[in-house]
Length: 367
Image 1 (cartoon, helix red, strand yellow):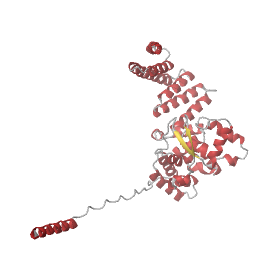
Image 2 (image 1 turned 30 degrees about the vertical axis):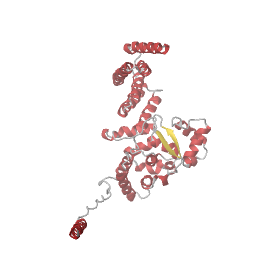
Image 3 (image 1 turned 180 degrees about the horizontal axis):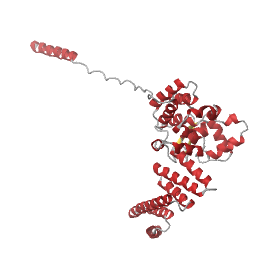
Image 4 (image 1 turned 180 degrees about the vertical axis):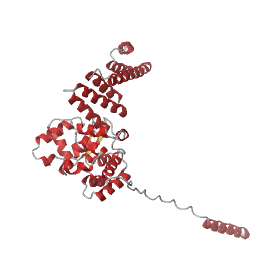
């Protein structure tokens, strides 16, 4: 018994020593933070342009490096200072917690919301952070955006309320802003921070390319914005993130040109349609191609694009409707065939199938 106890004590001691000598796993290495360096060889204008373009894509690290390098050279640049403050300030310190939720209408973007509600179109990045949007340049129609209730935002919302306008959507924002500017006697009370900084005289010489386009679109200087966009190289045009505002610019120019020059109007609608295709909005693109064709029947490009897209969409919705009908989803099938006939009123198959679906629906109601 004593020997057994002795052996157990020896084994326990050996086990204890073995545990103490077992090497502990190495600590998990801590990755150093990414070091962003400004691109070498850029002019001041190119650097500011690159910084704003990167920020509009949500790449705040490299954007911050470019903007800081620009500010080191152009010490009093208020644009660079404003954008860097948006990058470096925690969003709960930059904006109040209270907000109003609004729905994006066609042609609106974070830049236009920032201008209307916050008084500064270049606050698009802070607004994106406030809404947890990774890429500020990519928003969609119907998207709900939280707008922080700053003093500017409260004043703008109160003005819309007083005018009986819908405060849950951006649809009437431009009308409200135009009325507010017209009715206010003190220009300083309604001018944006960029205007207070004498943007046209002091800051626009700093801007070129994409960032100049962004400011012109936010300020609704549509003809100037189109001129700037069309001066960009084709590769640079693909980098423009705020397509919704650019589409509005072309549509606006087409409406204005239609009063005196139908040919120019057709071109504007055609380019708006092309941008909508890039955006993936084929239904609205079809409307633009149709307007272009109606404005100038001799524009073969508009005619070809309109007929091709018309056929594509009509056939697609007809297939979707047929599938819904086979699944006994009658309401969906009827709605889709009605959509086909809006696109192509002479679509024979849609007419006959729609009539069949409506009759079946009536019979089922009578059961």
